[in-house]
Image (cartoon, rainbow, N blue to C red; front, side, top):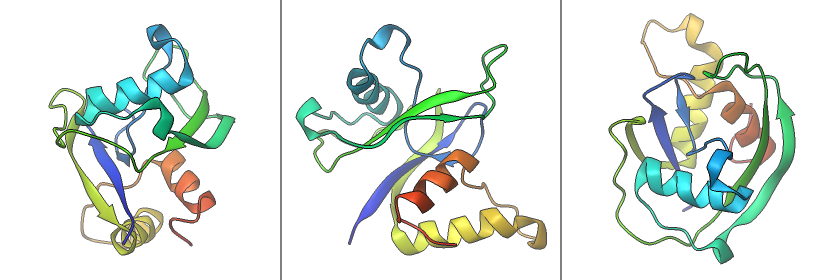
Length: 139
């Protein structure tokens, strides 16, 4: 069964999300993906293992950086990695593998949490959209 590695962000934007980050000094998009996964969850990904699934998508979502009101997203997936899952205590409140039914339930709670008395940590909205588009979940 396919599982996705998701983390709980310790900093804005809060929510459950995949590892992600700004290109900045990382250089290439691929190197950014590799470095951010290592920094956030401790796994090592070979560049040959990356498959681009979303290419340069502008999303108007607020950034914690001053004046940032959008991001240009490129999303990769991989099944190739080494190392042990070791979430960053600085950047995350933990990370784990999520099975599809768990992500589906989280998505439904994230969309309807105003009806719920149970406090949940929702999927970050951009990741809710991406996971629907990539058909990991449906609504």
